[in-house]
Length: 342
Image 1 (cartoon, rainbow, N blue to C red):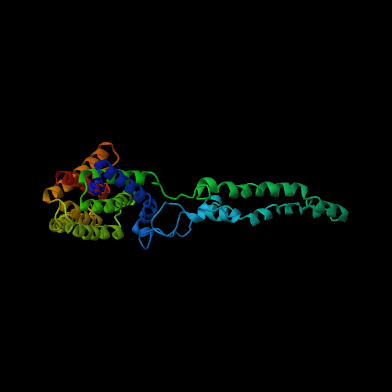
Image 2 (spheres, helix red, strand yellow):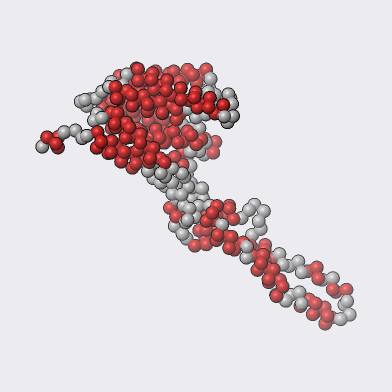
């Protein structure tokens, strides 16, 4: 009986957290694709269709279009690969059939009107379908097989229905992060909070890397969920943090980032200010030293990355780099140290 009531071992806890990370990370490719769009490219701030134009349903899951994955014959191939098959200057097939009509230049034969029989024979000889039909068939044959073969390589068709990368990378990264948090936190109430927030952090980092954007539907709910979940963890026994410092840390870190944004809007975007509400809450849970450590790690990593790009000639002093991934990485490192030291 004592073995049933005893807390699980560290290895078991880490394994369960890693499995959770795999399952949660497997749901991220689709929202990562839908949110990875610049505001000027989508009125709602997210994509509503796959690259082939089919409407997307749901927000969680693999980046795989069900319509593209279901073969529907030549009509489906033409729908999925229309832009890739027909170039802007390519005439439609009906125009290709009218192209052989230029035999009309043979009409100059009426210069010998004296022999009507010869005119009739000359008018009949070019109409012999042997030569024109071969030309029409040769002109039409390239378009017909291209419509059935081209979509497989240039557009999402039944063989390539996936429209977003990360099917293996996102679950792997999320699993590693969750396992590390479980190993550092142990059996504490706040571990459930970290495991729930970690996939959202991975999603934010991916979107910011792709399009340098931190969507409001992710940053603001992240801060609200962090404070609400930590408030619930604060009333449970054996927790190792304080909800008051989490709230104050959220406000303080957001205020500091807002000041930097007002001083240099091009150096720190307003989306980073809203993300600081969430990272400040999770870092503030373990106290002000953890908050300062995570913030310092974020700016240090961002500075090192920018200096490296400059030295390699891939960026200048005026280039912009996404800062959200460094904020999230700093928060992760701060949580690991804060949870282990608590």
